[in-house]
Amino acid sequence: MQKLCLGLIAVIVVLLFTQSVTHEGFDLQPLRYENLGRPLLHDYKERKPPRITDNEAQDIYTNYPVFPADSCRNNNIRYWRRPTNGKCSPAEFCGSLYDTTRQEIPPPLQAQPWTGVTRVNYYASCE
Image 1 (cartoon, one colour):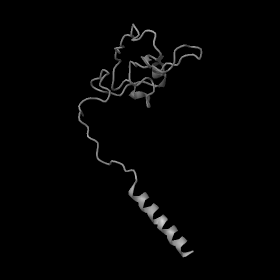
Image 2 (cartoon, helix red, strand yellow):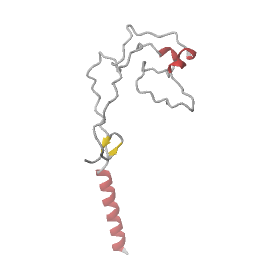
Image 3 (cartoon, helix red, strand yellow):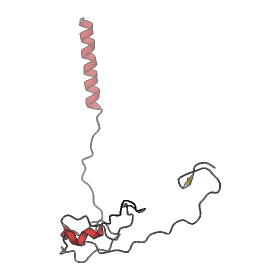
Image 4 (cartoon, one colour):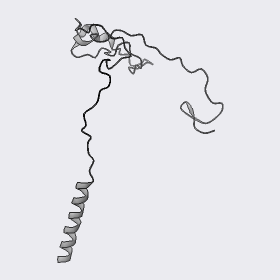
C-alpha cells in the first residue's frame, strides 16, 4: 500500500513538472512598423487631406451589392473599387480616407497548361 502511494505521488510530481516545463509561450516583443508614412491599404488612391464625409446609411448601402438568390453572381467580390465597401460604422468614415480606385484585373488564362492528363481543379495532378 505504501509503495502504491509513493508510486502515485512520484507519477503526479513527474506529470506536474513536465507540464510546467513544456508549455507554449507567447512572444510579447513589441511590433516594429517599418513604413509609418504610407497608409495600410496603399494600393488604393489616398484622399488628401483625409476628412470626415457627410455620408449617412442611405448614402453608403449601395456600395455593398446584394444579389438576388437566383443570380449566378455572389457577394464574394474580389476587386473592390473602395476598401470601405459600404460597411463603415459610423457611415461618416466611408470615403474619408480612400477615393474610388480603378482596379487592375489580370486577364484570364487563355490556354490550359496540359493536354489529356488527369487534373485537380486547374493543375495537372500527374504526368
